[in-house]
Length: 210
Length: 210
DNA sequence: GCTTATTCATACCGCTTAGTATGTAACAGT
DNA sequence: ACTGTTACATACTAAGCGGTATGAATAAGC
Image 1 (cartoon, rainbow over the protein chains, first blue to last red):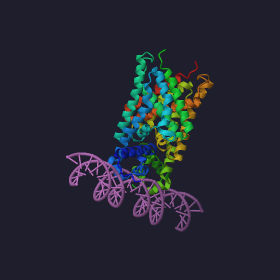
Image 2 (cartoon, chains in turn cyan, purple, brown, orange):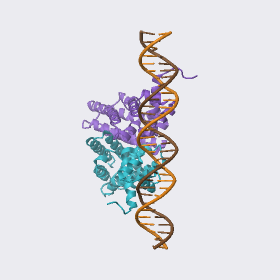
Image 3 (cartoon, rainbow over the protein chains, first blue to last red):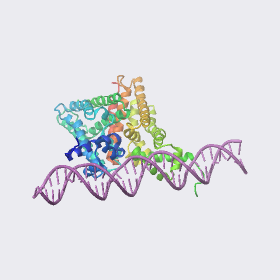
Image 4 (tube, rainbow over the protein chains, first blue to last red):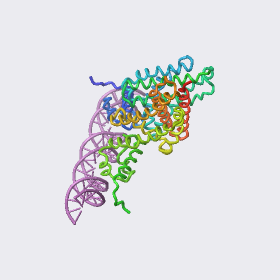
């Protein structure tokens, strides 16, 4: 049966998701419009009706897929009302699982889409850069907030620079994901993520008020 | 006047260096042969005489430029005969300076070329992946060696997993460079590198035998 | 029921891409 | 001085790229 009924929202969403997957694997520059169309079975008319350019499509991918994904994986788990340091440690443990759930085994080996976009395009396109920057800032603020709570509650040493520490945690996480991706082997990848999580847990423990 | 004398080695080297700079900025896929030729003033005949394909050129860039650069910046500074933990801490401090020296201010904002290649191409080309992997392994072994020396000398706790810890250090460093690159602002970039170095120095201190 | 706007499908366009084929000048060996 | 090889330069090709122009079918508004 031919799909006679139109569904513009579904069309747009399908294009968006296909674009995300293609760009996650091949990068922005390595992604071709034709490949997205092949994957979705759509045509150029559909795509360029909903998105004026390839760049606009990438912006939408960042706004509507990557940012919510980062929030879901790395920020939501912070909401537990545990001891702030325990909350961060739990987040480290749970997020690997969330990553595999969200991205699938295959997606895990493609690394963090946010970092991929940022690495490839930060020096090349201001629109992508500002979007990546906004997401990173949001992530950083979320973690810094937990640390500040910890300081208020007297759990975390008061000389800890929350923003700076949050940046360090994110950098380490992203670095571990990158190195895991580099191996292109699931076992090694998980090993690195887990190893990094343990080191950071240890580091977090060191932030406790004596 | 006209360059009548030939110098094939210099030609090859010039192409290699131009390819490195282009790929460092635009990535492998985003780099066009024509741009390399424009930059060097060479022609296609020259390039394809020395390198059979774009991919082969990238391999040469990794083998002959990126790997020596990583060794120069991150491994050579480990050779000091200090206390192993101090050596690692010194390395962290000195390497930022080495990076700016080696890459220049502009190059610093382009991040780590090794990580860039790995991020973009690991899932796409086996030849690039194995090369990146070899470089990362070499880097990791270098750091792990220092830690193992530390254990032998009784300076580092004997329960420290050297390889795993080395991986964590590299991941954090690469992550910090990535996040610095993302900002595209020199001041913020240096701030992140320095911040990361301090956190890692603190972490290293925690590995000391009590 | 008629009109207008939306949502696509098809065909096309100019440009760039990596790579090749061919020819020629420079060098090396003898 | 002659010969064969190396090192290029020029011109070209086929394919793929992002994007556009046009038209038709569907849906929405009145």
